[in-house]
Length: 188
Image (cartoon, rainbow, N blue to C red; front, side, top):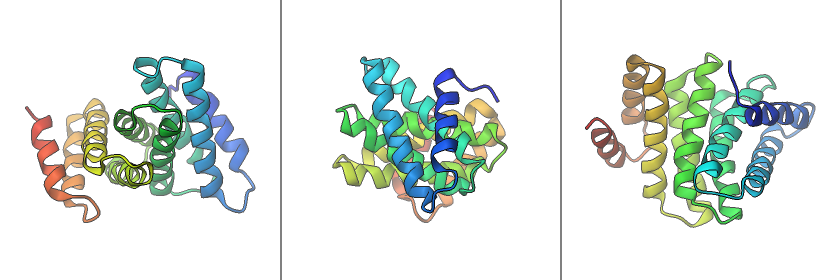
C-alpha cells in the first residue's frame, strides 16, 4: 500500500493513540479530528491543499485502524464524520470535506483488501451524521460523499464502481432518491 507521508504519519498516530485504550472508537474519532485540525492549520490554504489533506488523513486513519481492532464500518464512518467535524472547527468547506473524506476512506479500504461496497455505505453515513452535527445541509454532504465514494471506486475498477453503486442504491440507511440522482448524474 502506498500512502502519502501525511497518511503514514496519521496511520502511526492512530495506532499509537488507540492501542490499549478502553474506548477505541472515541479515541479514534478524537485522533482523526485532531489530525484534521492540525493538518489544515499547517496547510493554511484550505482550498486545494487542505482538501487533499482531508483525504490523506482519513486514508491514514482507516489504514491504521485496520490493525487495532475496529471494524471497517466503524473506522470508516468515524473517520469521515470526525474529518468533517475537524474541517468545520477550522472554518473549512464541510461539503467538500465530505467528498474528500469519503474518497479517502474508500481508497484505504480498497488498499487494505476490505469490502469496498460496505465501506462506501459507511462513508456516506458518516458524512450524513457529521452534516447534522455541524449544521450544514445533509443533502449537500450526502451528494458530495456519494460522488467521493463513486470516484474512489471507479479508480479501482469498473467492477468495483458498479458494486459500490449497487450497494449505495440498496442501502436502507441512505436516502435512495438522492443517491439515485447523484449516481445518474455521475454516469453522464
